[in-house]
Length: 358
Image (cartoon, rainbow, N blue to C red; front, side):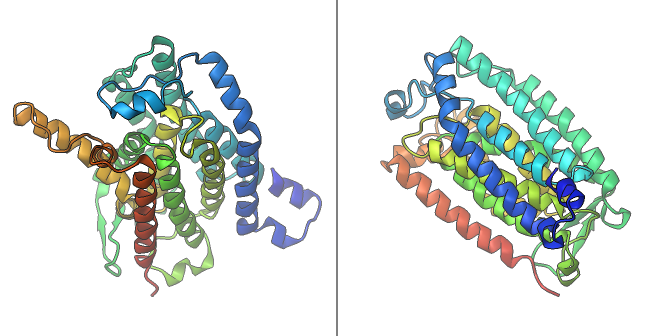
C-alpha cells in the first residue's frame, strides 16, 4: 500500500526501498500491538471468565500464578503483523500473500482450538488427527506455491550449511520434506509456549535471522553468498520485520507475570510462518540450528512419551517439555526464560556464520 502511495506521489526512491519499508513495517506492527494490546486483554478478560485452563499435570506453581490469565493473545500478533505487511509490502508479490495466508489459516486452526479450550475449560480440545490434517492440508498448498515459484535449478534442492556449494537434489521427495518442516515448526513453537515470554523471545531471534537471509536472497549481494537466489524475494524481509515488531509489542504484555497468553492462535501460526519462510529461502537445515530451542522442546516431548511407554511408566525428564524440567529442578521461571533467550541469541550468531561469503 505504501509502495503504491510512494509511486503515486513521486516520493524519493530511497523511501521505496525494501529496507526502509521493512523498517516501517516493524514500527507499524510494534506501535499497533502496543496501542491495542491493553484493549484486547480487557476484551479477552471480559469474555474469558476463567481464562486459559492450566494443565493439572504441569508445574503446581502454575495453578496459582497463571490461573485466570486470558489466552488468544496471538490475535494481537496476527492482526498487527498482517497490518504491517499489507501497508508496507509489495502486494503484487506472491511470497507476501503466501506468508499471509499461511499465518491466517494456521491462526484460525489455533483460534478454534483455543476457543474450545476456553469455553469447555479443558486442556485438550481439537483432536490431534484433525489438527494435523488441517496443518498438512495448508502446508501442501503452501509448498506447491513455493516450489512452483522457485527457479527450476533450485526448486527441489536442500542446502547444506557450512559446506560450500554442497546441496542435495531431493527431487519430488522435497515436497513432503518441506511439508514436515512447516508442520513440525508449527507444533514445536506451540510446545515451547509454556512460560511467560519464552516463545515470543525465541521467535524474535529466529525471525531476525530469516529477515537477514531474506534480504540477502532478494538483493544483488546474494551472488557473494552460498545462498540460492529466488525471484522477487526481498519482500520476505518486510514480512519478517512485521512479525518481529508484532512479537516485540506482544512481549510487553506477555513478559512475566504475563497479562495474556499467546495461545495456539499465535504459536501455531507463527511457527508455521517460520517454517514457511525457511522453505522459501531454502534454509530448512539452518531453521533447526537457529530454532534449536524449538527442536529440543519437541524432542523432549517425544523422548518423554516414548520412554514412558516402553519403560512401564517411568519418566526420562522430570517433566516435559524441557522448560518444565528445569522448573522442577528449582529454577525460577524467569531464569529459565532468560537463559533460553541467551541460547537462542547464540544460535542466531551460529546461524549467521553459516552464511559463508564466496
